[in-house]
Amino acid sequence: MTAVTVVGQHALVTGGARGIGAAITQRLRAQGCRVTVLGRSAAPGQALAEQDPDGICAVTADVADAGQLAQAVDQARRRFGPIALLVNNAGQAESAAFLKTDAALWQRMLDVNLTGTMLCTQAVLPDMLQAGWGRVINVASTAGQTGYAYVSAYCAAKHGVIGLTRALARELAATGVTVNAVCPGYTDTDLVRESLARIVSRTGRDEATARAELVKTNPQGRLIDPAEVADAVAWLCGPGAGAVTGQTISVSGGEVM
Ligand code: NAP
Image (cartoon, rainbow, N blue to C red; front, side):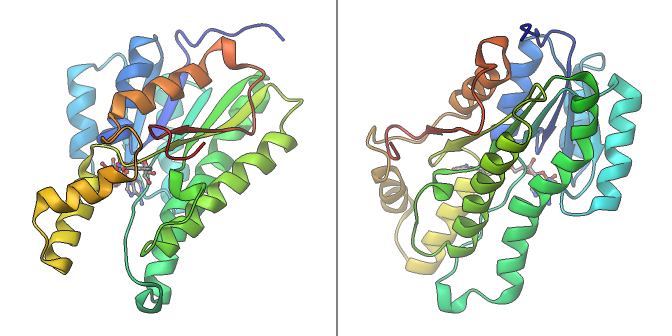
């Protein structure tokens, strides 16, 4: 298959204006992609688009709402053309003991992490099939590769993302579209800062102790830098990764081998 460069290609990054998503947006821009960032709130995406109007477009939608998504994807296509790369990065992580995990929390975790990934991929895949080339990268988690206590709904959803990745990679193998998952360990973003705040308020531990507990899961003893996740995503987008599909790449300091 001919190697396709990402320069000038249109990438859609869900949750692309904050945290890991913002690092991915920055990295794909540096590689020459035009990037649409999608989130529920307008302000963070608009701030990026104002700094780089020719390279970044911001749209708003909840990834779990097919109607909002269809409008946002149309708007993105009108701005930068058909979408060649999709990074399903939007996600949330709520924690609760299993017996305190009610149906609403369960559904919220499935909606944003798993159904959102499915709906975004369905919305964008026709562009890639038409072009005969595309990249879908799902930002799952080590919580999709192993279990953690007190996040059963999040773990179930992220395991689902990896199952979807594998099934879709097989289904699309002969189309020029690859589908892979990147699985970060605890990464230095708002999501982890909010988890730390919850642990502190629920357990009465101080922040340093709570942080040390999280960092202990990583054999390298540190939080992952969002830029490290973005590097793995960028490699999967590039021409050298054309034979890589259906894989899960753990960016976790060796936590999950
Ligand atoms: P973050 O800093 O909290 O950012 C989450 C992003 O997702 C925001 O831009 C947010 O924008 C967007 N988002 C959330 N819910 C959405 C929805 N329903 N529809 C559209 N956009 C939505 O989180 P992060 O740490 O960067 O996490 C990014 C991804 O990495 C997630 O899938 C997460 O599960 C995964 N991950 C994170 C870690 C970690 O330790 N940080 C570890 C493993 C995996 P709006 O609020 O504007 O919607």
